[in-house]
Image (cartoon, rainbow, N blue to C red; front, side, top):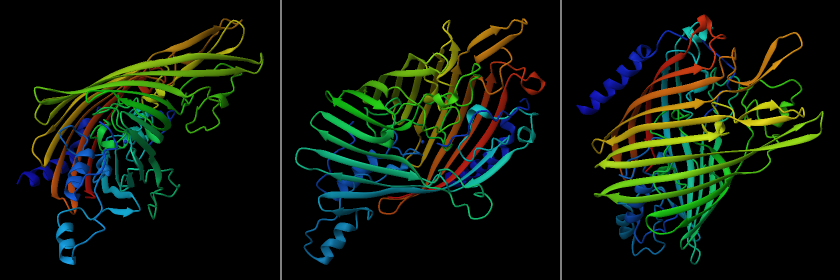
Length: 529
């Protein structure tokens, strides 16, 4: 009865989603659409059953061993292969009867396939036009175009996940390789017309080597700035990126999936420290008004500009503390970010370099059994790229010598929320997140007395230059069926309400102060065992 009720509520949520939206609002297409989502190298156990249990715990997104919507791809991560020594066919069948079948062994390495099959439906009260991942920074104002006055309904299987995890133990080392992909890559122009041939893309691809208290990782992983649930682990189940079905997650979340190199030191069972060098990008995202004569090839202004002349890698340091308070899991962490920006002025042949940086403090606390409270915070000068690129890293000003100067933009974000595993089958979750981008502009008065503005957030700036973006979310995850050998089937629902406020309303229809959006997701997911 409870499962029927949850299904009914999910459909009701989908049909009632238009009520989430306010009728103010106007579309800006200036912000590019994007699609997003303890030691990680525990040695395999002595029995397949123990390994299967460890895998389920490792793939869990909560300290209470509940599954995360985006980390279900990590299920069965440490399942052991069947022993090469078999006493008899009957004995082998008996051993295999109680373990997951999805594993195999090559030489001394254990290979574990992972992933899930997703069918996602999404309704939005205005037509964002960004697929199943919401372009938070450009939700349309009502009245600017048909997109702001029409709702949107979409079905997709793009969020389905495939991957593999490899574990081996050469000598005193524990080595883990991890590969994860989905189908949210660059879409062909006719994707929605006929065959829906979604493009596969790489999400994660890294190798982690652990010996004693030291751990070294190289490859593409979640940025070390992304909040953890446990330690400084790179495993998806140990990272907080919400339970949301939106493939761009939650407004206020600090995250990247990026190439990098990190060194982690496990001081003891409580303290973990890490330092990372990660791929940099001077990001302006089409959101900054540049001074005359500035060459935009120096910045990533359109998204994905691999020619950006970055000066140095982003440097991140992180310390995490994990313990039990009255028997309940408690995690707190602090991170620091250092960045370097550099611009050239062709007319003077001069380079100008400026530094940026930021910091975050994040907490995940199980206040009572299975109920986690979550608080994340981030503040920066030049960290807009880390807040889903909804704001630029810097504006460009001109100094007395006529040189272009990168001027880091104040940017901050935060999330407060809860995740409650109400029963083994039912989870409730909710979050409120927000992002803020400061104004940074330069006014120049010409000989005619006319004032010209450049930068971000100046009087009369475009509607894409946002001051704040906010989102409230509530969702339910209901496991309909689960078997250790065959996986599980679940329904995941999400209802969200968003608003965004530009610095200036002179470019918005009717001088509207904010745009609003209501949306609902209903997802059917089969997880591999």
